[in-house]
Amino acid sequence: MTTASTSDGNVARGSVVHSPEWRDRNGNRYEP
Image 1 (cartoon, rainbow, N blue to C red):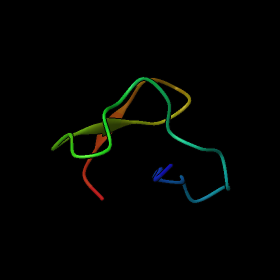
Image 2: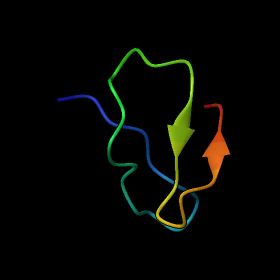
Image 3: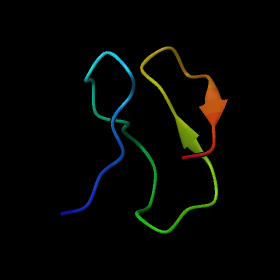
Image 4: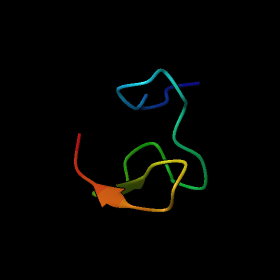
């Protein structure tokens, strides 16, 4: 499973692997 990690090491959740946008643990959107 491929996931994007935030700077503090938490894995982004609730996003599809190929989604153009991700959300960090605070729910903020960012692009990898």
